[in-house]
Length: 388
Image 1 (tube, one colour):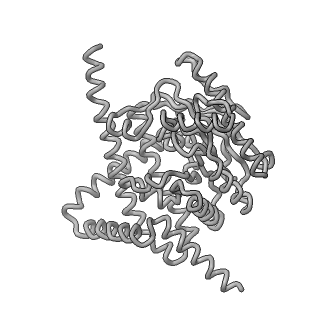
Image 2: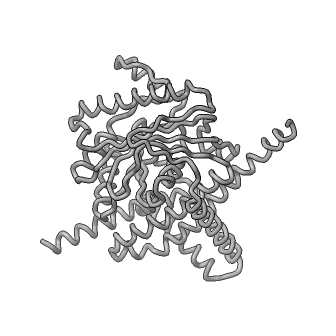
């Protein structure tokens, strides 16, 4: 056993590096393909661009999912209410680790693979700078927040205008806590609780309501929200806090559990004071639920399903085949593309084109997402003036 344990400790970091390099090279190739279709945006084909990007990027999302499930051996258990694909919604979830948002892809895929095409995420601005993946997430029109109240409100407004304008029915993930749970953020949450006379929370941190309030208000104004999904994530065996642990150390959670509770928007308060109270009450109840969850022996930790009580746990053979096919396709194509990079002039020209375009977009607009937003706004204004 000592030799096996030593081998495992030596081998796991290699898996982490393999994961990181696979994500990097496949994302770079995917970004190259994305830039080839940018003329759709320039010629005002915004609906077609959005549909193409949603499907293409969801096809790439299966790479990290496949690596986590089939190579790292992460198991996912999903319970509760099903997310409706054809209804715009807001997903709120506790932020236990820096990687919760990526694990959520596997949860949504278990429910309905097409949910990958309608999933949008609000993330920290720093993630936009991730090599490879950052450009792809920007092309997917994820919402990147700066922790500046006025700037973030503008970005949330901009995103909802765009989502509604292109006719997509998206489910938007927002972490009301604003950051992952760590010793430092837990301390700040406890100080907030003490200052406001609230009870201290053990398993979550108190939500910051400003972004949530503004986003929900905007979604309601545009009639762009049917449900709020209250999602609770938990790690029954081990918690891996960050992408550094995953990529550099090869550490991954053995299991990830999600529970979804669907709330009709008609049952959600409208006033700011009531919404603040409502959200805090949800987080207190979430903390109590997680306390009961973690008080069980590790082998028995499971959520009691919410709502309709669905359980998605076993690996569906068709879904497994789709993940493996996607993974093999991307890795094979990238290997061939990388090999020919040294010999074929048109491949070299294509990569140069991608490098120049992506550099220009970052310099001129601050990213491909901002270029798309600006182009869409200009296109919509010109259409409106023609109608008048």
